[in-house]
Length: 106
Image (cartoon, rainbow, N blue to C red; front, side, top):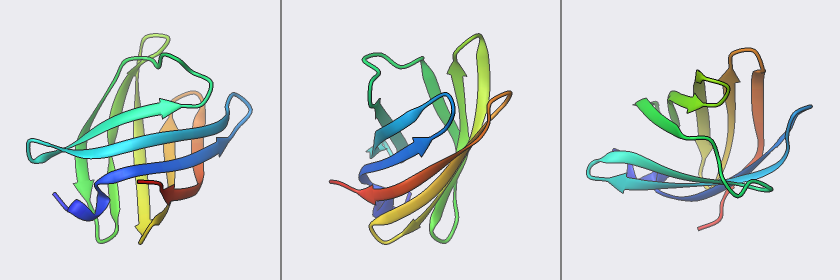
């Protein structure tokens, strides 16, 4: 696990079904990556689990099972450049959501 990804990150999405920002805390969960997520305008998020995390030179990718209208599996890829990032979440039916203006906030 690479500690350069540990911290609090914020990005935004602009799609037909969601416009706003999200914060993700990436933390050491006993030697594996752990994730806590908050999304603007949502007090409660659907249950989800992130797994199959892979590290690239400056990237993390993985899958997330989300319990929303039944279980769907999203593919996530994030590319880091110091304290900024870009990313995308590929969702069945909804398509690809680009994560914009990503930056470290803590």
